[in-house]
Amino acid sequence: MNYFFSQIVADKRIKRQIKLLQEIYDANYPITLEEIADNFGISKRTLFRDIKDLNHIFSDENVLEHTTFSGYTINHKHLIEDLVVQVSEQSPLYKIVSNVYDEIFLTIDEWADDLFLSTSTLYRYLGYLKKILKEYKLELKLTPVAIVGEEVNIRHFYFHFFYNTNDISSINKPTEQDMKVFQGAYHFFKDKTDRKLVTQHRSSLYWIMVTRKRLEQGHTIILDKDLKNIVRQMPTYKIMPELRSLYFPDIEEEYVTEDEIMYGSLLTLDNYVYDEGDDYGIESVLDEEAISVMNQFLIRAFEKLDRKLPQEESLSVYVLYLRDVYLLSQLTPLFQRNSMDVNRLIKHRHPAIYTKWLEVLSDDRIKKKFLIEYLEDVAVNLTMFTYAQHYGESGEKKHILFTFDGKKAYINYLSTLVNSFVNPNIKVTFMVNQHITNKIIEDLNVDIVVYNYKEESEEFKCVKYKTERMPTERDWEKINKLIFDAY
Image (cartoon, rainbow, N blue to C red; front, side):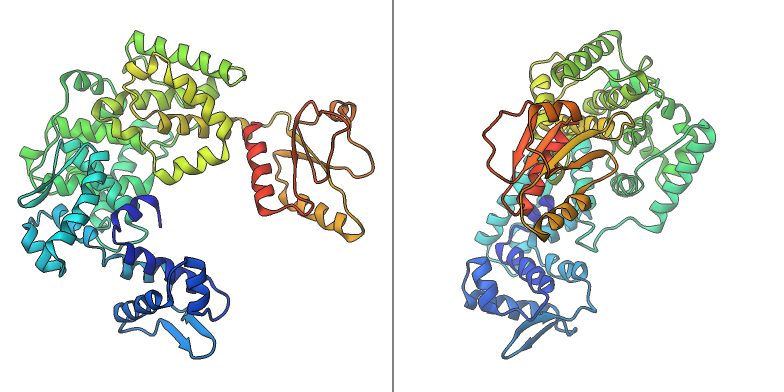
């Protein structure tokens, strides 16, 4: 379950039931409540009640199977994702947000009756929702229950709500009409611009779905005058008016305003897939000061990273991303944000690169000029670009030297593990017949040394890492991080 949806499923009981389902599903044997209770740190009585609730939810299907002496299994004709859907959609907050999206506005008492909850419990759930909405610069009105704020932020919340919960919930997915809009617009752009066009298909569908819904309900975007002047210079905007009937089918003419067409142009930047060598096209949309600030920032950043400034073709990825940050942030800084799951992954895997980007962003003029509010998210994106660029380069490979100690077949086994760990972008040497010294490291041009024994005879003049005698999963993960940070 992704972080966003775990916030929406505020009910601890439902979260526990989803975890329980996953635990039973993942077990390769009939698992007992005693084992699960020990793993979860909760009582068997609580788990037994959860099992009864799950059997009630799956009343029409033979999902959970139990034998008296062995334990619980899940009939694997069912997909775990489908089972999680059925449990997750019991979440009160999911039902409330979905109904408000459809403009079904109920009072607190009406919601309490509809969800079979006490008003005090409902207020507690709505407190969770208030915290989530605050992250999107929105508020929750309670008379009746409704989401209020700037239209651009409301759309942003609904996009992320459905985009991030789609893999879990079956409610409110893009329709065939949304698919036709995307395909028609994609082919239209491709034919009219005669340019390579790579865009995120699934993300685009959800933006189309939310935009269409809000327009059908009569909610329109109002853009800042200065931003509109910039958008008029964008290549995508020049052909957007021709897309009016295709992009906004069945929408009343009065709602398809110039601002909505410009908003559609800006959304193409949020779905853009970056590729080296793409045309910058920045002179027409960024002023001289913004271009100067961006260039100086990149020079300073790569000095901090102790790397050469990339050639123009590779640098284009950073320039285009920062261009999009500049433009979309004037719509709303929320476009800077990543999912919590992506941020956690990249910080964990590439801490050295991430930290350096964050340090440079924190005290650079670009923060104010480009309205960068979510420094960590922008630093994460720049980290991913840096890793992709350097890890994918076809130049000299990084060299990792493994020197392990062991008897008989153990060394052969470790050697096999190392070989299974290798990928084409890493040069690996497995050495057991010599004591490793700085001279060997220098002669072999080694970047990282990995060993599984105590070594105090010499301080290595490169990155080093000592594993357990039998390298653990944590060791391999740590080695991975060292390699990632070497790029």
